[in-house]
Length: 330
Ligand code: KG4
Ligand code: ZN
Image 1: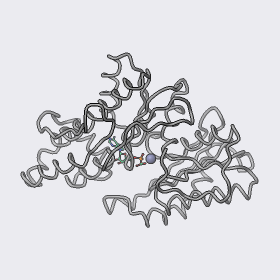
Image 2: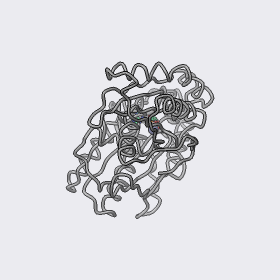
Image 3: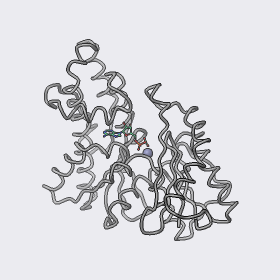
């Protein structure tokens, strides 16, 4: 029985995993950042403090267990915002000492990958996974659980960050990802063509800053008021440029590694146009595709608890002096 804790960015989350399924997965999203059009690190870390214990209490209540039933703790220790990570990690260490149970520090990105297994336990490595979120865009080869080979990553903005920045400059709302997806449903993706950065035929790296600048230049040229009258087409043109690159690169990774399965992970994986585009292209090539349901795509402690179960079951326990690692890689 594992209690998972996740506080790497602006979501305070706790979950209980019993070795077979999630018994609870409570997520409290900090709404204060909406006022600023982006996450303010200092506010994020402070906001975790009053939330973390009530969120853990709620996760235990929803699971129908008392804290004495927990056998191990799993907590994100990186990557993420230093102050935010510190709140979850300190809480886990305190509980570990107080309850006399082990804890495992978990890589947030590995957690996103495990979210696929939570939703689809039939997934077995080897596979490739595209992690696309507000902070990360990378293609990873997973030959077996616990082994991760990063094949390519973004050289500038993450895909979710591009959605958020474009949402902000179009004054469409925050976070930009879900807003742009909704607008794009009523737009024509061919009406405005934005550039796609492939960075070379065999490259699995990404770049989205040029695309963001192209949207900015479009707005400067036509004026924000005119652009606002045509938001669905602009949103569809932008989204299509992002998705073309994401889908092409994950299928290139499938070809280069010879695997037969591709997964999506992270907040942007909730984008239904991305899911459908990948499904259509991959099925023509005999590739199986998976993605988690929306609640397991965005940041949540369920995925951390699942990863923790893997490590604690094989005796991989973290020491009490484990530090937050804001820039931790896979
Ligand atoms: O994984 P996540 O919750 O947090 C990070 O670790 O970054 O991802 C949040 C990101 C935000 O940039 C948000 O705009 C994006 O995921 N996102 C989406 C969608 N839903 C969330 N992007 C595109 N389409 C969506 N439907
Ligand atoms: Zn994340």
